[in-house]
Length: 196
Image (cartoon, rainbow, N blue to C red):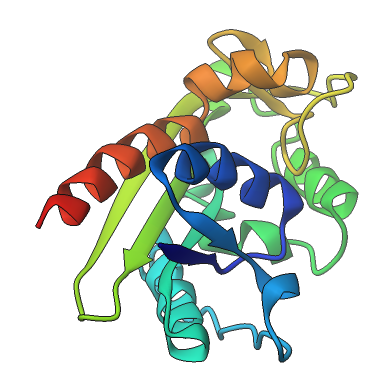
């Protein structure tokens, strides 16, 4: 059975392939299509809405079961920002986003630097069925970037229960991360939908 992953992010694709291929799916992505994949306009108000928008776009362009995710970081002191705007928070690169976040938290004490990552995964079927799942990982924003070889995005700033995400292995991160938790729920939910 074919399933389309509506992402251009190689790390997300790899994570989803690890779960879907052992379930018997042939995983397709943009490079497997005969025509360019058009990005959806992410104008939802929640991570779940944006994931569904992207998954529905994947279904409409391919005709296959489609999966997409939306993720970001929410900082309590900033009222949940950057939230759904995490990727485009500064209008620049990951480094620009991190720099902006640090500026906005300048002189804020550690106890008020609580934050959480969110990952929402949506799956839509050609017969109209759909579902979303959500995973979260809570922690704090560091006072400065935590050097390390791991992670991407806001990971150099995020300190989880197991330490800075930039300093842990992929396996350690998968066990506690927002995406890891969402993927566990996704796999369970997908099995239920396939039994129907």
